[in-house]
Image 1 (cartoon, helix red, strand yellow):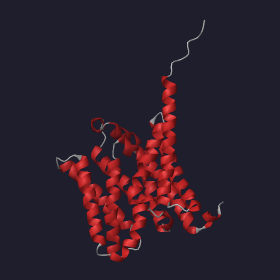
Image 2 (image 1 turned 90 degrees about the vertical axis):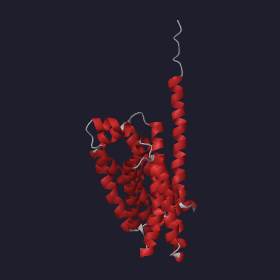
Image 3 (image 1 turned 180 degrees about the vertical axis):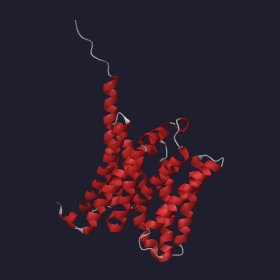
Image 4 (image 1 turned 45 degrees about the vertical axis):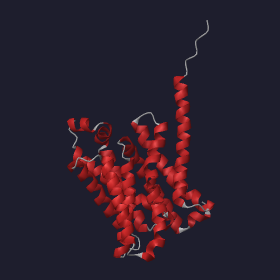
Length: 280
C-alpha cells in the first residue's frame, strides 16, 4: 500500500470517493436519460447558499445546511413546474441565479469565511470528516435500495413519463423521490469535486458508459463502475502529483470519456463495414 494511504485523512477521502463515485454514476444513468443535467447543475450552485447559511449560524462544516437548502430548492423546482406555465429550463435558470446571489449576499455577513469558500467551489475531499463519510454511506444505501426496488418504474419514467402514468406508475411521488435522491447525491458530491465541478461526477460516468453499453443493465453497471474508478482514481492520482483533488477527479473521468468515444466510434465503423463477399 502506498505510504500516503496510511494517513487517516487520505483513508477518509478514498472511502468517501468509493461511496459517492458509484452512487453518482448509478443515478447519472437516469439523470442523463431524463435530460436532467442542468437540474444537477442548479442544485450544485444552490449549495453555495447552504454553505453561506451554515457559516452564518456557526457550522464549521456546513454539510447539513447544504443538504437542507438543496432539498428545499429541489422541491421548489418541482412545485413551480407543476403550478406555473414556465418551462423547466427557465425555472432552473431563475433558481440557479437566485440561489447563487443569495449565497454571495449571505457571505457578506461572514467576511472572515471567504478563505474557506475555495474548498466548496472546487472541492476538498481531503478535509472530509468521519461524519461526512457516515452521511454519504447512509445516502448511498438509500439510493441503492430505492433504485433497485423501483428499477422498472424508474426506467419507464426515464423513457416516457406519459406511458409510465398510463401503465399505473405513481409518477408524482416517484418523481419527488428521485429528485430528492439526486439532490442529496449532488449536495454530498460538492465535498468531492466542488460546486463548480460536481455535475461532472453525475454526468460523465453515465455518458462514458453509454459508449460501451449495449443495454440498460450494462449501462447501469458500467456507470457505477466508472464512477468508482474516476472518483477513487482521482484521489489516488491527485496526492502524489500534488494536484487539486476535485479537478483531478473530473479530468480522470474526462479521460475515460475520451476512451469511450474512441471505442464507440470504432464499434460503429465495424458495424457499418460491409461483409466480405465470398470468392467463388
